[in-house]
Length: 346
Image (cartoon, rainbow, N blue to C red; front, side, top):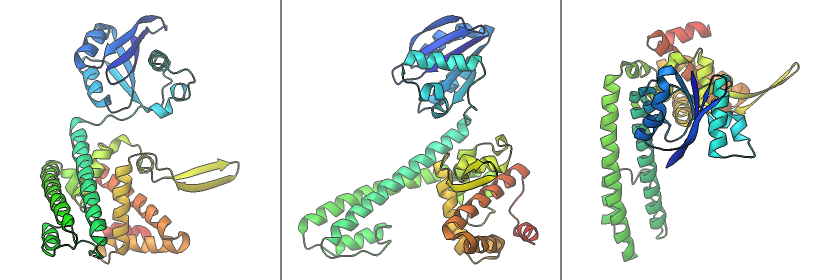
């Protein structure tokens, strides 16, 4: 059995291969390309090859290449490999050697989950959508600030549609150059809106192909984006042994400090999938102000918690509870039923 650690870089990476006894077999630089990795490492696979790499922006395709040549790949969070993260002497060679050493001793931290290709594609679409919406929002805010210089205060959603932009342009400006600037921004707004709609069509197709999305949307206030964000981030919910582990993965779990008989709970850890945390906190806000029957048990629980801990804490707690419900819906292959929550509350 061979053990290999790879320190990945953009142009050339460093690999270090050892035997089970720790004897170095090979080491050196390798181009960060599919062909180079296959050429340098395939020869060790027939006797068994285990590879350790750190998570990064090139991890996905390198993981696929190594798996394709039948290597057993372990992906680790670089911040949790203390021998590397806290090392005062840090080089590519030392990092690769350390990964191989820890892998051989089975001393690496819990591996990072590598999502399947479908989940990765979904993550890519959702990231692109968020970035496009962010760019469009910034663009609208710039125009809003410009027209404020003329004393014009636009309503909250005045620039959310093309009709709103056209009304602004038709109204005219005291400073002629503003008309040129706003018209240019309007073209960018239309382009961004078209791109967002294209991605939304792709996401709608992903929704149709995955029955789990429909199951999640039986929950109150959970729509297509929230459901797909959950599926993209979590991938397979059964990889979590409990709903509590999923809450920790989202970064919504509180920090805990325990010493002797004293235990203190602090703010949330924020360690995990930030997009999952952000979307489901928004859902918690919507559920808290809703008046439908479907949300009644959740609202009752939220209001009781808010009286004791405050609305901010109650909202985060509600987001955690919603994630727990979503976890059980997928693991149990069932749909949301408010009456079950009522029975438990009773």
